[in-house]
Image 1 (cartoon, rainbow, N blue to C red):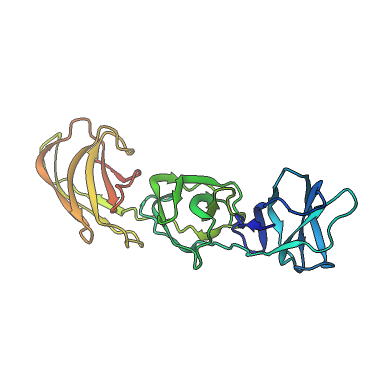
Image 2 (image 1 turned 45 degrees about the horizontal axis):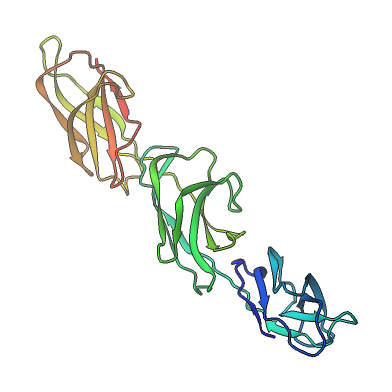
Length: 294
């Protein structure tokens, strides 16, 4: 009789998968088979019963998150109508462990309380045979409470998922990555504390130097935020509300520039605000810094 077991629970010191074996051969017919976790390969080892199945069934399920404890072997015993065999067929357990490493998420969404960018990780130091992919989440703690999946599950060989711009931070504090097998998702994920980037322009100023009524012209200036690592530039608009209603572009400047000229003879029309949006490689801010035109 040969025994097979490939651990598909990717948490350390936990087991889960199927034990299979070939039917026993011998002069005494077996009526059942019992499968145990055992602390050794031989007779008399301390053991824990997983299941007993009738002859003709050659598989037993080891439930997800089964504690490995001090067990070292899978032991399979055939049973006749008289007794269980004394010496089992045993297989040494190989505990599969697959943990994503080095999680990073650079928040390229420059609005406060929103995140966006590429959640990246390194593959496990040891690629367990049962590892098939990864699933990422945002959660309210490192254990996965209140989690919300990010994108789709990705296959082994892909080590990133996209977090869409304008993803609300809400109560989320951590990014998580769980390894997966064909049967189970890991119970204990890798985690990274979320760091929210706020690169909103500060103290926007504009002095209208066009002396004609209902016309504007002059220099628009602002101060950069304290955090500008991911700012690639600023987009400036005139709009009919502080939120950007019916906005029209005035122009854009590169990171490091903090002013732009509004050409003279610009019609005021229904515009009430000047808006400055910071822009990253991912996206322009959703919420601008606004200045009421006076």
